[in-house]
Length: 115
Image (cartoon, rainbow, N blue to C red; front, side):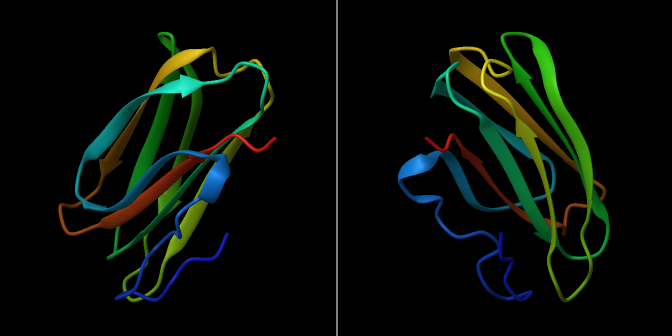
């Protein structure tokens, strides 16, 4: 997935397969959402920049289903993702936590379930 230059959009809108799009956030944050389908694969993608890193964790129904780190260079974007098979993300709600190494780290995320 493309990631933009430091002053542009980090991740584009995910389109019709998207469940969540956080266009831009700085520092620690996260999202909670509903509407996940157990019958589709799930892809969590995070892009960031600003110097430092982010730790990303995703839980579905109280179980951790993804965890990864992304390096966030100064002046360009780093991208990381986790792909989960159908059934890993349970139907309904899920949460994602982004733990940034510094408050100036800028990040974006998408969660998609392609058909």
